Length: 486
Ligand code: ADP
Image (cartoon, rainbow, N blue to C red; front, side, top):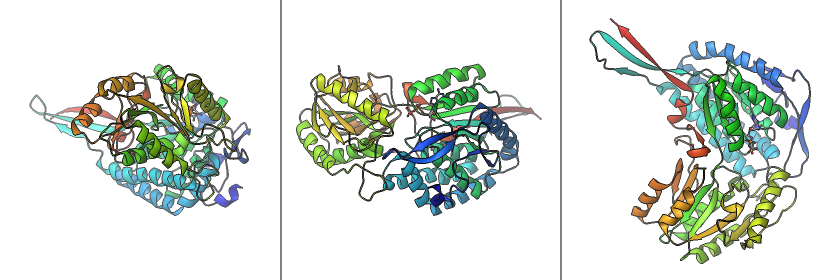
């Protein structure tokens, strides 16, 4: 079934090491399934630590040339060419993404566009990675601060944005001269391979990008190796907080640069002055994209009690127009959850909440395959699991509040701190709330805020470092100070 993708995946579901599309040394494979119907999409090569060693060696060898024998302008030109190839292949890339991930085709195309915007952005940033000449405190001396690429970077990425979570890191890292070993999520490795293939076509040299698909158990051993290897200079990870903590501690022995984009628990506030239609629109966008499986999804909807009845009515109406099903079918707005485990967790959270008095206003059950009905639940109280855990499903959970200071305190009483959303027309309130919220990103009267021009990332246990914007360059470069006497 991969034949239809021959322009982006000519060698099928193999590993990509040192510019070779290779079978794993172990020659074992693991299944990549379509989460809508559990049908096999392709048996995929299952890489192991020996493959990872080869990939790191080739990235290490390629680093000397890529960082020193290409100019920023050369790298920029390759990223621009890559951007045009992805434009050409957008429909194919989106279809492959939907097949292995389940999200609606329109969202998959949106993800490819979003991914490509990072190639475009960093093609520009590559040429503006400036250093500094600093006035020296003594005569006859010149002080320089120059920026150098950090080296070989290992990317470990999740299944919710199979292409974008790679592109956002890769574009920045490649633009400054780093080389990559990519370990994609076991649920969605094909999009990673296709991304690498389009990069090869654009002229990325051998060894600069390596891709190691593997199953879950090999992921753990490959991950450990990448963290502990002295030939890997940085780890850039997007995924769960639990795995992020493992990687951070494994990286301690080599004092690696570690960039982490971890779980969120986003609060969304609807204050009395808010334009309710816009608040519903923002909630729909933030809550239901990817069927609620994004780390910036509104997880706790804090709605002022004076307007909660109206807001819930309007949200219910908007949610009723959602259509759950096969992402490849026209009109589908909600794909399946990624696997059975995700469905079971959603059912548990809802049962715990209703046992403790919450009310399901819409939805509440499983559909075909791994689909889950868009669900609206009210009367959430702090003793419920759903009030604290990342839901990662199409479940809108309404928490009522009366007092601004109290609700901001409640919102901050978590170890997560990724995104937050504020719907209000009161400028002083917007000022107070945006400054007191302990998160890395805030949307004010806006539910979708991520783009290549913005610094994406979290505080507290939601992560370390930023992706996108000029800040994205910081993760993959380091400063060198040169003090020269004349
Ligand atoms: P999710 O819960 O969204 O699946 P995970 O954090 O489990 O997120 O997975 C994100 C990425 O981390 C995937 O590529 C997965 O293979 C990888 N991974 C999972 N466990 C480990 C581990 N122990 N060490 C290294 N990588 C891991």
